[in-house]
Length: 101
Length: 221
Image (cartoon, rainbow over all chains, first blue to last red; front, side, top):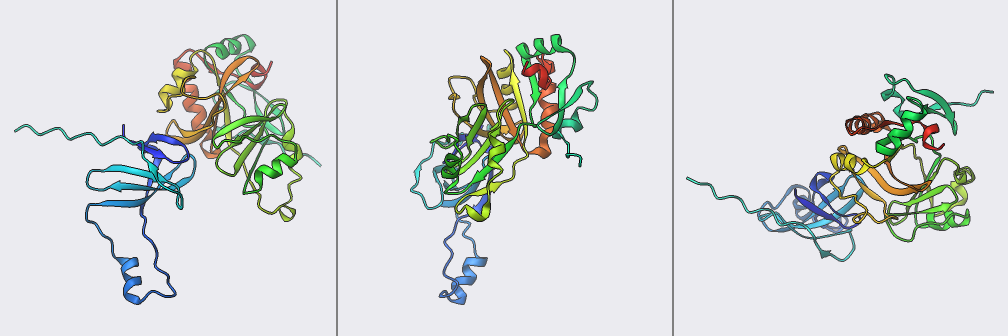
């Protein structure tokens, strides 16, 4: 079972969580140019890397940030928005079994 | 003028059972199902009781704890924990600044909280609560929970004052254990719209394990 660490409720099965999309800093709409704003609204970086993401713990209604390596699917830290990150207590994804020929 | 009598949300799942209904706290609930002797036996093995009729009061906001203290209620210091805020009344801390107050069978603190006036109370906001609520008891209760919940809810893993928000039977639920007349019982709350489903799931597993439904009268005799 894959687990995720909710910063309010502790380690729970992934089935209790919903993915809320990548967390991205919004540029100031009053000062940003059209190019910067259009980039924020329309562009996504799909390259594998460590990303900040919104996650939602549905039984408690808790939204939080998870820093996740989208290549290895390892969660490095989870924390409430605006709070300092703490080390995640998540399981590392199991290594895939090598396919036999 | 006739007072409005509400019906327990799980009544929709009880239509095939031969329960005796009665009114407690302004809500029609099942007082007994199969007779005192059988229900007493169920309590000891695995008894499921609908206690959706217990009065509830929800409040949240940075001044919520302060307002509850002004009403004479103790509040838990820790997030996700509970205390007996007044005799016969539970106070659950559901987050940094959200509380659920629930009168038990003989508690009456919630009646005093209806004086809450939003216009005069800055920093605290009433939250309408109409959860379906259940009591589980008996020697097989943990076996039932292990079938319906992935959390480790054994005594060693679940602190006596802990409130757990997790999924039971696939739906979001709030959970704790408490002592009721010297007996350890488990409390489950879920959204009212899932009440009939939760009742059916709890009862189905309870019956498989040798237990069954316990009415309000048998539970608090």
